[in-house]
Image 1 (cartoon, rainbow, N blue to C red):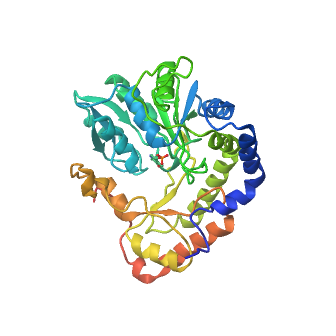
Image 2: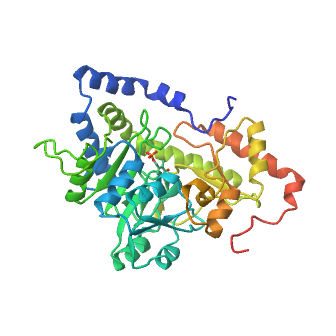
Image 3: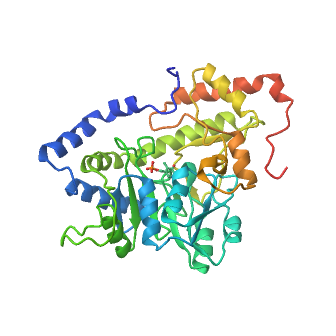
Length: 382
Ligand SMILES: *Cc1c(COP(=O)(O)O)cnc(C)c1O
């Protein structure tokens, strides 16, 4: 169906930036610059500067950014890597594919890693931690880094949803040994298809990822240093991403203004828990605006009937996907979020009018007296 309020709007996005995007593509193609050329180097330099690291290395997905970062940290069979259960499956698959064991911990109310759960999960086999900056909010990185440093763990940040977000003024992807980004089309900085990058201050790590993404080959000497993979960020993608990166700060501002509008309109709904974690240490980029309610499925149906498209990230804990062979866990926040969370329309193209329609439809839903009698949104500890 076509929605009155789409979750994202790639056609409108292209309409707005068509001239710049078309020029980046045709310029790259006319020069014949398809693989490992100037456009890629330019984008890598600008991305590193934006994130606040010395190096950025383009790869073909955040999955590969994570996988290569773990390999570069020496992770393999017999090791344990801690991350959160409430993340996209790629975070966990990257660990599994190194041969290491993923150890999944719970999140807090802000959907991010609970530093206490992280510390409690450390064993003598733990070698690394992957904090995931979900929905455009950075994890509480002062605590995560302090714990990781004390236990000598490599920190690989999954910053797929947090390019441009900061904690105490420092950019997502610049805290750990490396930061991993995604340019999947629906991320805040979206390409034409799959894309990703590793950011780091470590020259050796940058070099290793540079070799791993291109079959292990040192382009200068022709020597193969690893059994690598085929995982380049294409030049034409880099050229388009470089153009879009210049707009990212204004897009994030727009996302934040839509988020404020949602918060303003919905803050008095007793059945709703909003992502309004007023703590000035964080600058959130709002990859997603996620609300929680015990009436999630009914609310979602209502919004759909009003032409408002929403998404659920994710409707069951990852360990319930039996084929993944993950141990069954009891993680109260993760489980409750899967039952209660709903992501509202959010993109750089979401208009004030669309956000008003969405917020108005939600308020209308909760006016129904059946929902007014219910207790307040239950806490995980209840
Ligand atoms: C999108 C996403 C990924 C994977 O990114 P790809 O570029 O599609 O591989 C990993 N982690 C999180 C948190 C994501 O949102």
